[in-house]
Length: 57
Image 1 (cartoon, one colour):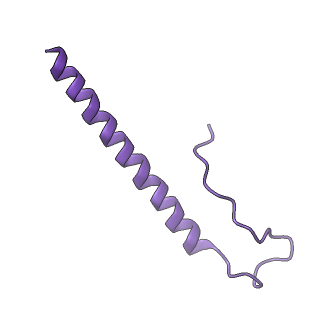
Image 2 (cartoon, rainbow, N blue to C red; image 1 turned 30 degrees about the vertical axis):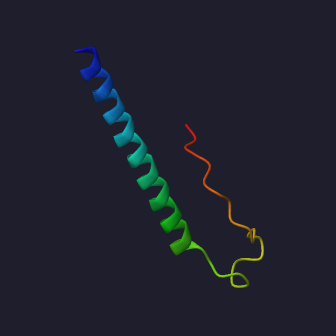
């Protein structure tokens, strides 16, 4: 019974990791689609992109 619980926990952790990876990849895709080519942005816009570092509560 204990081994079954450990296997279930490992499976849930793997699913959670896959979910986080999928969300991070989706965020990168959205950032790439919404990025403005250099030289065409607003004058006050920062030219270097801000990297995704996690969720802020």
